[in-house]
Length: 152
Image (cartoon, rainbow, N blue to C red; front, side):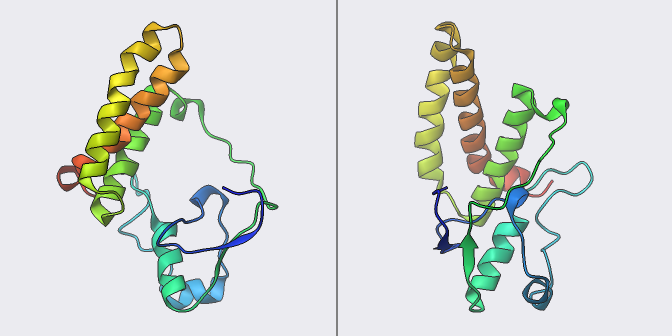
C-alpha cells in the first residue's frame, strides 16, 4: 500500500483485515460482517472485511487508507510454516474465485508461471523464492478450484 493517506475504491483495492477499523454505526447499518465469509471454527475463509467495505462504499461511505495506525499482530508459529502459509493462500484464492475477483484465465496464467519457478528457486539455494512461488501457485490453484472448495 502507498505510504500516504488516500481514498480507496473497494472494487479495486481494500484494506486488509488485520489492520482495518470500522465506524460501528455504519457497520451496524449494513448488518455487520457477513458470516458466510471469514474464519469459522476450523474453516478458513476470507474477505468479510472486503465485503463490508464494498457494501459501505455502495451506500456512500468513504473508505480511507491511512498508513499511520498500526497493530501488533502476533501470529502463532504453526501458522508460519510454508505449508500453513500455502494452505491459507489457497483458501484466499478460493475466496477470490468464488467472488469473481480474479478470473480463471488470470489464475491459470499466474499460477502456472509461479509453479514453474518453485523447483528452480529451491534448487538455486533460494528457498525463500521457491516458497514464495509455491504460495502464489497455491493461491491461484484456489481460484481455479473455488467451485469445489467454496466455504467448506
